[in-house]
Image (cartoon, rainbow, N blue to C red; front, side, top):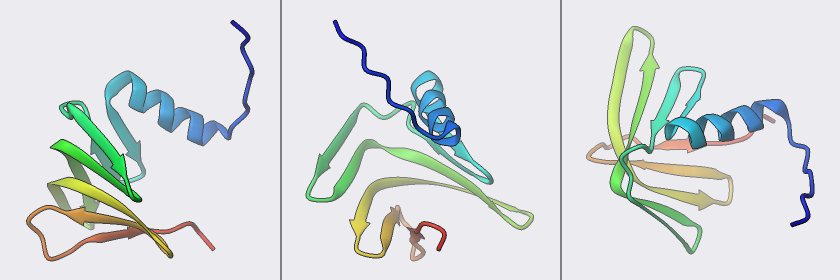
Length: 95
């Protein structure tokens, strides 16, 4: 087997390594728990989780916990459809 090293930013490596080791992705005040997810489906710019992934964030003094079943790629960012909520999330790169 031929190993080919690929260098990526340390922050990206740490996020991927943490996800692989724990099933969780943590960044600032946000965490995504995929540890109970059994199936991840990727099709047509959409990522689907079954059962839904757990998501948690802190908004001021309030801690918000919910689930997400679908993440969609959009032209201006990544759309996170928050289950059972009228509020969804758009993730965009810093400009």
